[in-house]
Every structure is written in C-alpha cells, then in structure tokens.
Length: 383
Image 1 (spheres, helix red, strand yellow):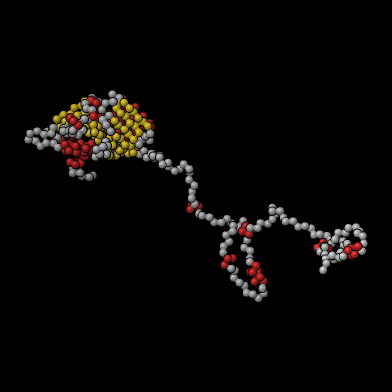
Image 2 (cartoon, helix red, strand yellow):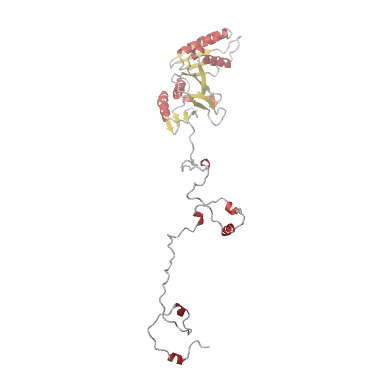
C-alpha cells in the first residue's frame, strides 16, 4: 500500500493558498496522507511551571522537622478502615526520637562534675625542672675545717646578715662567699674548725652568733644527720619555729680527758651558780674556776688521786646536763672542732651549743637549781 497518492491526484489539487498552521493533530501525524482539517482557533497554552529556586524550597531533611515522626502509609490505610480494631504502634515508632527539637529543651549532657576540666598550658611541670622544697627546714654542713654552708633558705637577707656578722669575727677572713638560690656558703682563709687556743675561741663565737641569728629568724635546732657516714660530714637540721628575740645561747667544750670545762658567752649569774654546784657536789675534786677575756670561764675537776675513786667522765656530763636543764637551757647540737692527734688518729673535740628554752611566765623560776635541790631534799613533796 502506497503511503502517498499518484501524480494525478496532486495535479488536480487547487493552488496553494495562504499558509495555515496545522493543528496539533496534524503535526502529530504529518506525512501520512490524511486530510488536513481547516483552521481552528488557537488554544491557550497553560502557563509554564518552573521549578522553584533552591532558597524557596522546603527542607527535605525530615530529621530537622519538629514533632512526632511521620506515620507510615500502611498505618493510615489500616486506621481508616471502618470496623478495624485499634492497633498498637510499631516498636520503631515507640523508640525515643533522637532528633533534637528546635523548640524543646536542650538535650541532657554529661554532669558538670564529670566533664574534663581544661588545664592551663603551663601547669604541667617540665621534665627538666627541679621543684624547690618548702623552706621550713635548714641544713647546716661543715664539709671541711674551713667550710660552712646552709641550704634551703628562702630569704636572701638571711645570707647577707650571716655574711655581715660572722666574717668580721674571723681575722683571716674568707676566700669565697656564695649567697645564691637558697644556699649560703663560705670558704674561710685558714682552718677555723680545726683551730686551738685563741682561734678556737673565735670559731666558737662565730657558732654562737650563728645560733643567735637563726633563733631571731625563727629556727631551732632539731637533729643531726649523717653521723655514721664515712663519706659525708654530719649535718645539723634546724626547724622553723616562733621567732625568739630573747634567746640566750652559750658554747661549752669538754677536754678529751674530761677534766676541764670551757664555757663561752654564758650569763655570768649562771656561771656563778655552776661554780657553787661543782664545789658542793665534788668537794674534793673541784680545783679551779678562772675567768678569761672574751667572756669565757674555765672549770677544772681532778680525775682522782691515790686512794680515792676516779671520777667518770659520763658522771660529770650527766651532772652538767642536769644543771643546765634545771636552769632553763637545753643541748641544741654538737659541732666537731679542733684537730686530731698526730697522723690524724683519734677523735676531735666537740663544741656543745646550749640554748634557752622559750620563755613562759614562771618557767625560769620553776627550773632554778635551788628549787630543784630544795624539792629533792624534801622528798619531792607537793604543796
């Protein structure tokens, strides 16, 4: 079957007139030889619908919409069926909605006490730094016969006061003085801690003045450490206490034989009482009581003659400690002083430091030797 007519048909057609726009039907089936209808009135085309701008589009993320989750289509169809019993909601709908509500309360967070606190960047101690210990204890050390040092000080003025007060007492002076970063150190010219005679008295006066300065600064002798060490010298430990501006300190040395006492910087009244007690306690042994310059008293006690028992050294020491304790003084450390015997064999003498007890109303009167002796004479009878 031919899709187009023969030539005779085309030749019998009328001449073409004005062009008429074919309708939508003719445009759809153009070229198939169907008769073309006449002109038809124009049809109003619908207004074109363009997609909205993305700024005007509604959000497509359902998790940001407030309210309950959107029900499923099958649930709405089942609920709209008449006569159908009410169904329980699905487990998925019963789960707590984790979507944050814009209009609701903010979600609960971790308790404030459980949250990690932000620390400062410089609060952590550096690995190479050494912390300074609290300066409530001072450590005094004499490493050699010409050396003295005090460590763990927090007041630079303490080292300055020690330098200004102690160095002028020693006539040869000092070779090196250090007062830096809590440490005061002096290397003397000569050997003050191994001297004898007048130089030993000068060395004792330096120790006496050092104790006085520490007492006014609020430091009291506590103990001696490194006593049994062969490689480290002994060190004296001072603990921080109340400042004592009325403290009394004196120095005592005992001879190696134990028959001579040398006491410096002690109150004169206390020395007179000691002389009387020595005569009363050891009437046949007490031999000498003489005063020298530089506020020094020397007492001598014989060890024993033929036919008399020897006086033990510890007996004399116990008597002295008892007397000074009754007078309100206590032993506050010992310091080695003087030289050893020939070839360095033997022991060095010791310098004993006594300091008055903190003053209390009536304390000195209750600790007088006379009151102790009277109470012991009456059998320690109470009032």
